[in-house]
Image 1 (cartoon, rainbow, N blue to C red):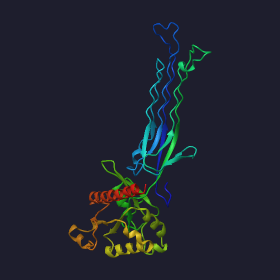
Image 2: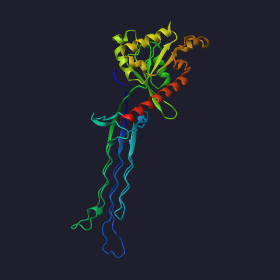
Image 3: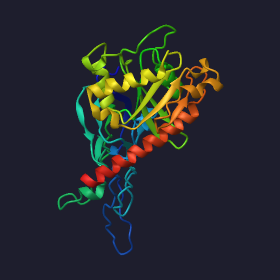
Image 4: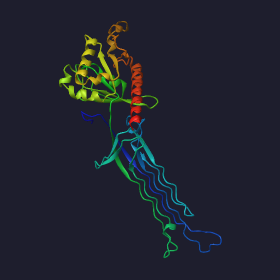
Length: 343
């Protein structure tokens, strides 16, 4: 369960590093070397499993469906003291800020905070020594070798504190939860009567290219929220974390324009900088209004996208998603630029 004051994405993984290859017993058989000698090689190390911070990743969606992850075993040693090939490491690329915990003990393993930073989740087993490694002045013909060590295996929990890319802003019963369910795989509570979300709900949108972004459905914004009315202060703290605001104005409201101004007033009263965030206006429940009557609801003074959508019939959702993708990509481009300037 996610805490009421944090957006946290959880993934549980069973990780198993590779076993080290066995050392081998071999003997030299060379012309003009009548007595020969041991020449069995060492086994290769097993592959390890790592986390790597990737600034191109924004959610844990890519690893969510890889519940069991195994690294290859090392190869056994060969003759002529040849070492076996090591098992290839498995690299799990995750967003910056991903933390890892041992699920069984609760131990904090670490987190990756910087691009390219790696964190070891499970170490591969060491390869066993071949009989050539045991030759000494007192032991000229060792006839034994070591087996490879087993790799580590453990149940891992990954956690990522998400900063919502898009925050849904609107009054209770504005159709925000229905919209979230229609746009993502999230399944928020939806009721056919006046009802407000009590805790933030998250959904992840992923397109055919594998790009993803996070939408947050926040508790309905009431008049007086900036003074703490309802869930106001908790709601507004979440809005601070969002990158893009999506104002949801239901067309069954008696005056959507006045509602929009009221929502902006609450944001301004809490923190004027919130109005500097990029935003989009979505007139929800558009299935209740015939197409020819909809233009009357548009706000001509705004130079931002204004769309008519319906979570119930899915009308306008493809266009809305494309607009939000463009806004998110534009914001992320600015964010990456700021990182490069300050790093």
